[in-house]
Image (cartoon, rainbow, N blue to C red; front, side, top):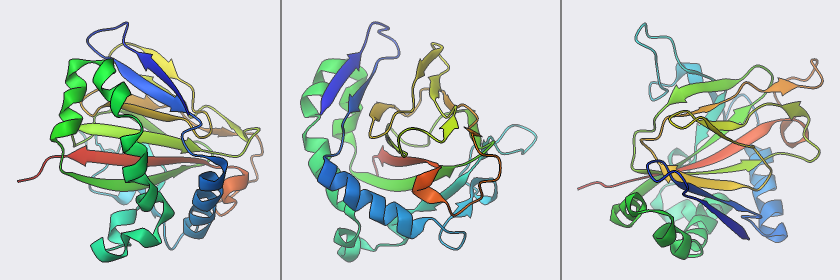
Length: 211
């Protein structure tokens, strides 16, 4: 696990971690992602009421997604490797959270979270938006070498791009504007269902405070 704190810009600091999951954890997560990658489990972001929209009602995103919390009730969360590993991973970044910036203290105030998986293939994207929570954690998964170009995240407030790299996690306050650049597949004939062989996965954990 290699942590990089990016706080030269004091107004919009963030940090990212390479090798977020161990090799053993990666394989468990790949098996879970393979299981979800079908048009029955995933739904289109364009059909999701929580997807960011422009003033004319057009959605800002084109991709596939699934919410894990809807699949696993509280007493079954251990069934999901992704949900089971999240608390352990949070403990391992407490020092980075404290060192990055004062606005990261918000993470300590959160008491609820939910997890979504986004799956991107050719021409999929997410235009500049904010998340409806307090802190956002994103981890990318894809096979190497990549079967696509694009898919990087841009923090549009400061025009900083972070490469979408396999097993890289990035954490930032959810009010930062950010976008996902369009994905361009190297093989135009690829279709939904190829999963780990070609697609770009983003495992996103949203953290908020409820009463």
